[in-house]
Length: 93
Image (cartoon, rainbow, N blue to C red; front, side, top):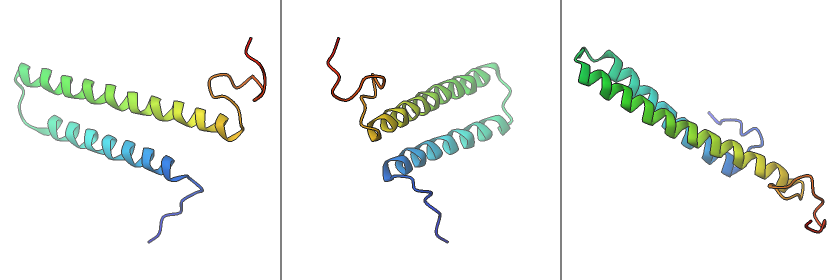
């Protein structure tokens, strides 16, 4: 069955696919770690470390994706992503 593309560019699809794969792998790892019947304190710290590192990486990627989308939005309109309030031929101040 063919997925509707919704007009998304290949670059957006690539970003979303990467986020989906990583998010799914992180969720699967955490579900697996949580249901293992080991209650020793070092194991709890290992699980916490894995969750913290995975969450930080995921948030970093989501933030980069969001900033990339913002920049593409302004590029499509012919403006500088860092200074969208300036006109394209506006001299620097």
